[in-house]
Length: 393
Ligand code: SF4
Image (tube, rainbow, N blue to C red):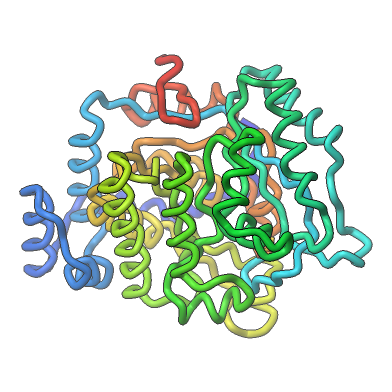
């Protein structure tokens, strides 16, 4: 494992272990958790009670049990992948983002197709099967830059799945190139896009979105785009980035909206559009949100991360896979999250720039992922983008 540049605070880990050993549910939390364990869907209001009052011990216990029902084989999957950020140039100026630059900034960059192909080649040489390509909302790159990029990757590395372009990028393309959103998705798919990562959702409630990302589309548009993605025969992952200015109720509203889209797309297409859900905490380092005094600069604790994750596992009864966010939380919390609702360790991420820009960098090789999953008492398995198991260890 490459050294993490931030030690995981021992005090937090002690508090988490203590909480997991001693569940202390309030009567209301206990009633709702029993309902979930009996296989009934919990309501928005009940989700809010769990989010407000639920203790980590009780939530983790029930989330772990629900995970076992989804995945009785005790397998925890991971994918060998690489993030590639094709440009840091962005016109959307999200206040939680430490990554973007304006076109004229001296340290702004755009990768050439040759550079991108070289990075995909390095991934393919290690047996990697997925590339997660995302970038800023560049105002001037032609649409052919993106479609040609996909075609080249497919031509040279057909074994690598393109799990790329967030919904906010897709909507940016539609605006910039004056195309219907559906046409953007269709043309990217035709060029080789295999799956869409859920980034850009942040928290799908308009009040916090207006504060943290005032130039991004409202929540409704993000959700509708996923319905179009399903109509075009693609699937993707869902996400939540929390711990900035949202309320606990807005976190549950976010989960509710995802659950509704999953229901609707499953009804229409026989399978829900979301492969998975992954949540991570806002990383405040170097962000305008802190510089403008809209956030105190203290990252949400790992305890709160695990609590929110467990509520998500219990609430999202129609999304099969929940991914750990060890990139923001570190590998030890990533391991603990496997007992609080996660069944997937995500990507080994040969390269990561966005979270790193906020000062948080954790890396794991495939060998690390196998060891960490095994040490957590689970069976490690390498998967592809489509959650098909390629190899069990
Ligand atoms: S999060 Fe994405 S869209 Fe927002 S400023 Fe950063 S790069 Fe641009």
